[in-house]
Length: 482
Ligand code: NAD
Figure 1 (tube, rainbow, N blue to C red):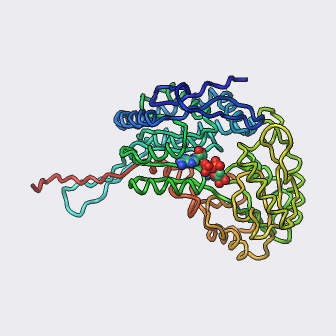
Figure 2: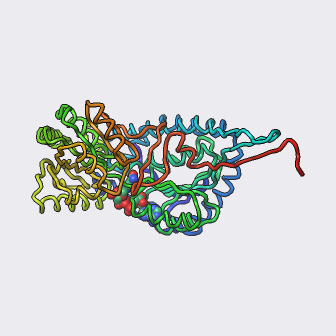
Figure 3: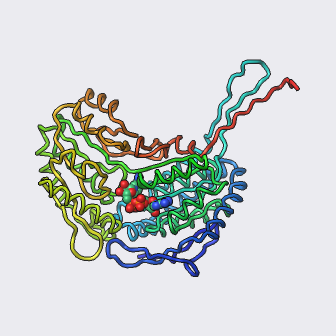
């Protein structure tokens, strides 16, 4: 068992502890116990981080992409070397089962590796001139210092996506990680320091989110903002970014539909769906939630799904037998209660779970609400927790309408053996991604992002790197005309 570390701010390479600063407790969601105290950055701390980002950018932008890649590769290797330490911190702070936490470390290392390599392929273009003697170039350059805001639900992957693509592009970063999962973010900062990242290039801060976002986004030198979190906060930050004419990437809420056609085996799909739904206790922006199931197999799907959901072993994520951990915080417990109360008031069939688990920690039972209608709260608000809902559908037009009726569009899933169904759905669903016959919505090398209220811009793939680059056009005449 590792020891929970003393928490600090990481100001361009300097560690600053909670002494003489406001601080707040960090809780273990499996027990409700206090793990440590996370310091709140003062305005002076934020200015120190911004100064560091300014100096760090001037250094880092001049480092060759090959050398930047070497630092990121070392970081990926250290992440794997420290897998147990990182995974344990993830489970302690967030609650997810240790096997899922280990997988998160491996995925995060994979993201670093991808960006380490992709930074070297930041190709520009040579544009054929209209007249002889002209050389016309579109060159990719680093955007500038970045303010990054990461949520708690993927405490290693989300900062890794933002930091590794910004660093690969040659940018410096000030990260505000979640106050609920600070040790994971700090362990990543330590890894980058140990990997040879120059002083100043990265800072990690915590504190009052509003104060931090206003000061960082309002600083002239910050050129790009990347945020993962709720739609409401994302829109607030968008306002600040637009006022400063700054580049923005927003990764916001989802409420993923899953369309299950009558030509599939409902038992097999239910088994895979339960595994996908209750991963990280459903606290995933791509979590499958609105199950639209063809009427011919709806009841069988519900029966099997409910059996399997009820059999999930819920407990402390550090216990290797646990299949689902606690929710991350009491806000999520309250949100689950509200959704289920609304369903009960409408006489919805609560087929599994539907209640918290008595005792210590923020535990809630894996829940299935069967046969919900469009007015139910669960049909309209992303649960971001262990609640799935089903509704039967009759026609493909009906399924398309149900998928697209909310103003969000992040992940979506289609299960069918009929290529016509797959073709119609992939074209018709308004979402950032459509996943057919499996559940893997993102990989380091694939673009990921939402449309409408689910956000703007992309992370991952070549697009993730381009989010932190700007294009400079150069036109050079070999026949001077002056
Ligand atoms: P929240 O909106 O209070 O916070 C989300 C994140 O934004 C947190 O990390 C928080 O510290 C940060 N934040 C809050 N105010 C901020 C500000 N003014 N400036 C900068 N950062 C700020 O939500 P929550 O209670 O943590 O989660 C609730 C909802 O958020 C969920 O229901 C889900 O829809 C959404 N969410 C989405 C994702 C995602 O991956 N897209 C991740 C986490 C939460």
